[in-house]
Figure (spheres, rainbow, N blue to C red):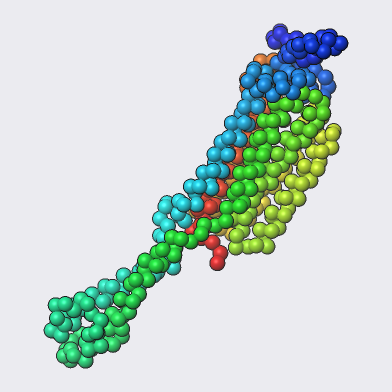
Length: 393
């Protein structure tokens, strides 16, 4: 025989409505005592709040009920992504252009410049020694300007043929161009990082999703009207997270293909707008449409496979493409698992009433969402490193 938690059937209302000064008693009630608009999961039997005054509803964030962990999990997630946003704005652009911190090692033009300059310096040293062997240069000949043009005409005929006008020209070239090396290094070091707006759009989408979710779980019990408004904000926040998740993937993957970039970003933005519009229909939030809700948002996420696969076709041989695709696969797996748990209402369907406070499907769903969003953030950081070092000019 399954256990049910003791619950009062009294909602948060004064027992004597004629007595204006009578104190309200906010009590937790059971599932059977809920009005229809608050019934969502019959496998969670107790610890419900119902029509509490707004002040008590907000303060219930510090009390124990079946929404406590739903509120706090996404509130902590919001604070986590707020910190990640600050980190991205203040630290990551200064980390250099390559993943291993060697800003210049991956810049072909810079390597070529330094390689040519070092080869020139070696040749210059050899020429100076050769000229000194001809006894034409005094010991102070290290400061060569002024004597360079006399070298090829003064050496005996048996002097190495390397002392030609061409090589002396290299000696003359050294003093004026050696000073250009620090300037080239300074120019490379001062190069602006790739634009960060797609990454910040994603971080904002994640914060909107997490904050609206937390607020919804906190105050939707206040009234039917409040539930109507906050649930729609919750669905809109989910759509915002999914849509903005595409922006770093599409923008940085197709940086050199603006046509594809616009096509994919336009498609997912339109898809997200359609999902938000559908969520405004009142019947959409009915319990019998739980699978439809999960399916709609899952389809939005699964559509991300198309640009990811396209990226691998274009850049399949590059490490950056493989690493970012792995993060995206991890994100998709976490989101998919969370959606499956949410739709199946596991584990409470196996043990009704046992997971009312801790461990029910919606709490697990929240944890999967945070983990998936963080995996996607790590992939976004890889995109920034990639495109800081290798972009389209």
